[in-house]
Length: 323
Ligand SMILES: NC(=O)c1ccc[n+]([C@@H]2O[C@H](COP(=O)([O-])OP(=O)(O)OC[C@H]3O[C@@H](n4cnc5c(N)ncnc54)[C@H](OP(=O)(O)O)[C@@H]3O)[C@@H](O)[C@H]2O)c1
Image 1 (cartoon, helix red, strand yellow):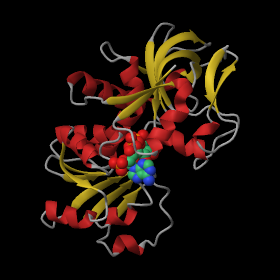
Image 2: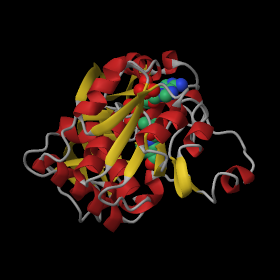
Image 3: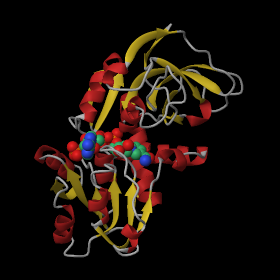
Image 4: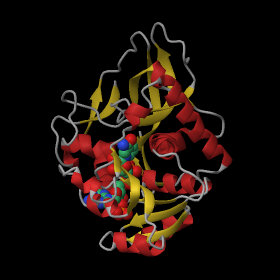
């Protein structure tokens, strides 16, 4: 037997149950991974609450982890037993051991622990595509990053600052502001009430060419108001709830704005892209461009506690669950 955190219904953190389940066998193209650490991500909350639909119940949520390959099924060419790997995407991470498609695994280089990889692969690849592909960040750009002291936020701040951008971070407290500044944000705005006015002051009226908004409902229009004409609104998450339907004239009225709602699933769908982003994240960790802040650690069986902390905005940087 193995252990997993399973949901028999969607709802509050209390629906997450620690249960013994039979050890699965890898089929063709699959591996069995013994997980040493599992990454906690905000998307886990969307699945737990039912905002994002689970394929079936009971279900195991979680989309990120790292560990050692313990068995491979037929036709697996990518990895072998004993390899250290990580992944970001396939649902079913909250378990001591799990089945994965071999072509979704990212090999871990020497010097990157499974704990760090599990904490930041998903958030790091997200930061990578957001500043290299969704918007091609240029040296000298001034950009706006919401939830700047969060998991994706701290990595975005560090990577964007390394590329020569000025980051205006948005956070909910002075304590988080200090952390965002220590990770590359050149300016930090606490709260979003006065956001457009603050961005106007900081940019001396120019406003910003891109906003990375992971908060959703509560910040959507304030974010649009921070963009320069022809600016790009990147709405990549909904921590405060989904963005409600809006009139397209909201974009024309503010200066012919662009908008996108990107997902890591799309940007990593091709194995070549997955491996490229995975390697870029590993290289950035090894070179010190990214200094992952794995601030919280919970036992996997205490996943409900981890969810309560993330939802209550009590976490900073990244969080791991350890089996
Ligand atoms: N589209 C993609 O490809 C993709 C991939 C990864 C993550 N994401 C999204 O990126 C966001 C960040 O993910 P993460 O795992 O790194 O989480 P996180 O940023 O560590 O945690 C969420 C943060 O959102 C802020 N927030 C603002 N309003 C909130 C509210 N009403 N309730 C809870 N939090 C609120 C909080 O920061 P403050 O206290 O500073 O406001 C909170 O700490 C999430 O929206 C996630 O869905 C998207």
